[in-house]
Length: 415
Image 1: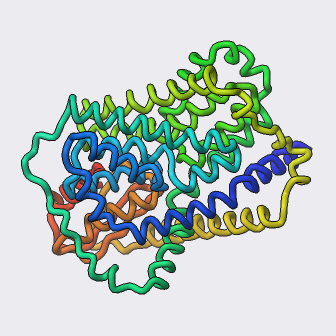
Image 2: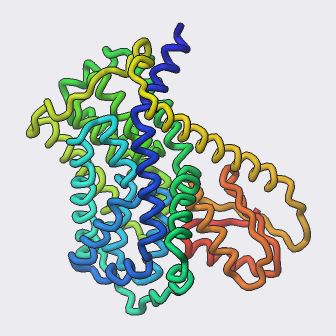
Image 3: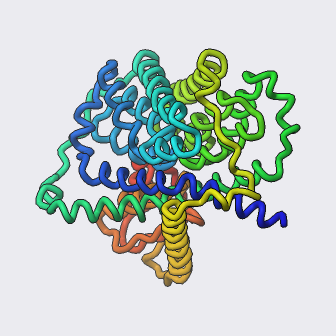
């Protein structure tokens, strides 16, 4: 039956990805807890090539999506990172990460997994150096990067590892779970319902197909890991590996949400350079894959046929899939309960409601909560990601809340 065909295809893709996604989440947590952000920012000042290279090298392994990287980049910027380094970081980070590199290898093979970070590095260097040349920093003052590390230094290794697991398997799932599921669903639907003949006309014109993918990717929001099954399904339907690669790179980085926020935080010129760098690099490497590299490197097996997928499921992959599904369900349940609690908050004369623009993940939510909580006079802050609303209780001026949220990289208006 058709629904069984869909289910088996979905399950097969999930089984292929889940071990690598879980490994990536664990590594992400270790990076988050054991790598000191204050140390990083000291290396990211200046418009020269050194800060740009360092920013790209830092951003490539970090498993942050395009919306999650924005508050991080704003934080780095406030701590003294240059506009050139920040742009390099913004380009490199959402296009790849330890989680997406592992998942890319699982579904698309080693060549894709190797070329993806190389392309991200190339685009980051191009964009960062271009911003340093065409739109450099003109401010003289730098915010101090002195951040207290005493509490973290006093933590035991066991406590740090526990925090790593919590961040990787819970915070990261909260941030990426929705987009990962969307990517899996879209890939399954393309595999099952889109006929091969639909793409026949584009096979002869890979450049046109790449431009079409960019146009599709811009209004679309998808994380680096969520783009992988979509790219795979495009290849299985007959499009070239280069076209699929454009989806891998442009999908996570060039979307409306990122562009709008970047325009407000980095400026129009830097934003234009950012988008140009992402698009040109993605298409250039796509053409390189299609016309200069051996096609045998990018051959993937069409084993996602729903009728046979259940025959290729090992116990380890299945256990990883069950674990990932349970983490996703737990994350969605938490968000559901949080939304109910938010609606039931008692409104008083000391409670104000604000609309926050630009929040797309739990990283965004946490950044807004942290920015408002730090203000003197604030008693409680509750932010609902699904509605984009924040309820603030306490005696604090609207202008201070507005300034704090905008400093964190988001727009805000009173409701």
